[in-house]
Each structure stands twice: as structure tokens, then as C-alpha cells.
Image (cartoon, rainbow, N blue to C red):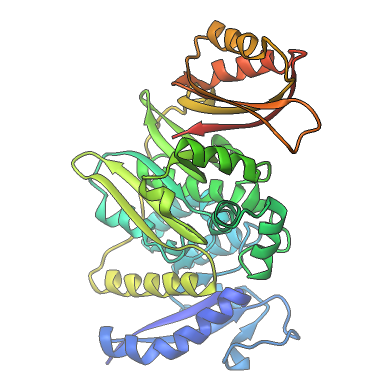
Length: 427
């Protein structure tokens, strides 16, 4: 007699529909390969009258979550609703009902991961969430399974395909931000409301998950410094190219002075580095760890197909763990201090619009010197797009964020400075 896995699915949107259709195609293959019969027993939806494209038996559709929680034959719940309300309460209730969880919900894991993991340990069920971070890039399983004994020093990642697509278009095709965003919407990379992507919030959720797994401690969303990409313009890419750099939205967490510093912001990175070569909607994660050195994992980061693939792979992992009586739950139990962004030491790129008159450079340089900020290079150009004045770009040597902030506050008060255009950390 074959073993069986009976699934309930919470949510039947784009991802849920693609997952159902993909699972229907893969069911026989999974059964033949692993000896488990997969059956979808229930699908929870909000609106029964909505037209569906998934190939399903109408009899398994329900609007009552208790039909899932109270059905003892259901042993796996696949949560594809998104958000945290009511998904968290549903997942918690499913675990209490002795059901393992597969989810693609980054908000859920970033906000309630520790509670979910602790509850799952107590009930001896598993939680899988590969699709919650980088879709087609298997970073979660790598951290939990393959790097469980490694001491991770840092992660630098491109984990928002939408923002990386926009920045690629700005660099390679000289598109301004709004035009690149419109193209991303047309191609389905950006949502009608792109706030989470362009403000860095999506990457912050994902970094919270990666940080917690990498350092076995709870990193909350509000613990992560965040800046978005909407204030970048093509002029910055022109200067970056001249200096040998490109601009990427990076999610970074690092072991920093015996604590953890986690941040999401646009960064200038050298064009010769692997992350600089990640273009379009691709994702990439660079991991540095003791004994391992540097590892880079990359893959597609946007779209229903990569997400569906990750969910199916989680299902296979669950089957394998069940066969070997393994519980898959990360440990998030260490207490590690968090480091404020003000203590970050980095090189910086500063771009100002200034009046074209004698003494400008010396006055600004003096303020940087007062804050013990050394200048690596200066570019001063007349800008034909400006009615008057010039652009002045500084590249600094390493300085603290606090010192840079103080210097900028003083510089922008000078009557010779018309505008601070941009600030980038140089990684």
C-alpha cells in the first residue's frame, strides 16, 4: 500500500492556480519516484463565485477554514494567501491540528517565523518556505541544510527582481526611473502598486528571513535599515561607469563588531564583481563563511513559474523528510546585539549641485576634513541640463555613517550648495 499525502491549499490566486495545475501534471511522477500518492483534499478561497482557471473538482472548494483544520486526513497545508492576516492565524491553527506547512509568504515568515517554528517543533511537524525569499534560487535549503555548521560572516544579495530589472534598464538602455518602472509593469515584473519593490520593503522582508537563518537569531523587519531606488537617476549611472562601478539594490547582513548589522539600500559595487553582472529580474545571493570562503547562488527571482517550482521542491523535501522521519525546523534561539546603521564604516559617493564660483571645493572639502573623512577622488563638471552651476562628485575613503551624515548636514547649509542629489555607500 502506498503512503499518502493529503494537501489543503489556502488561496487560489495566480500562484495557487499555477501550483494546482503543476501538481496535477506531476502527481504521477511523484508517486512513481517516491511512493507517495498526492491528493488535494481542500482549497480555501474567499469567493466561490469567482471564475477559476485551475483544473480542480468544485467539490474540494471551501470558504470555511475549519473544514481543513478539522479534517484529520489532511497532513499538509500549502499557504498561498499572502500577507499576515488571516494567514498567520490559519497557519498556527493548522500546525496545532498536526499539519505540516509549505508557504511562499515572505511577510508571514519575516513577521512570525519564530512563533511558527516554535509551534511546529512542539507539534513535531515541519515548515518549508523556500519560495518565500528568492523563488527559483534555493537559498533557504542551502542555509538550513548545507550550511548548518558553517559560521556565516556576511550575506550580500540582490533579492528583488523588480528593482534589479529597473536598475538594469536605467544602466543599459539609459531609461529614466519612471520609464523603466512602466516597462516593468508592462512586462509583469512590477505590481500596479510597486511601493514594496521600489522602496526596498520586499527586500527587507526577505533579508529578515535570511538574517534570522544565517545567525540563528530573530531579526525583525524594523531592525533592518532600508532605502529604496526611486531617487536614482541616469546621471548616477554615468558617474558610476566613469568610476568603474554600477548601482544595485543590495540586501546586506553581516557579523559586525560582535553584533549584526542588517541593511537594504542602493549601493555602488565594482563592475568586476559577480553581483555587478546580475541583470534583469534575476536574483543572486553571495555568502561568506568560515572554511567555505565565498559562495554565490543565483536564479530567477520573479514570476509565478519559479515560485511554483520552489513550492513543488518543498513538497518533495517534505516527502523525503517524512520517509526518513526528519523534522525540518530552523533554530532561531540565539541572542545577538543589533548594530545601528550610524556605526557602519563604508566608502561613500556624494553628488551635489553647486554654484559655479571659486572656493566651492575647498569649503566642502574642509567640512569633510573636520569630520575626518578623507577624499579619494573628485569629479567636477558643468552640467548642460542645469540652468546654472555645476555638479560636484566626491568619492570618499572609509568613514562612519554618522560622520558622513554630520558632514552632509553642514555642507547642504552652505550658500554655495544648491542641492544634494545622491548618496551611495560603496561596497
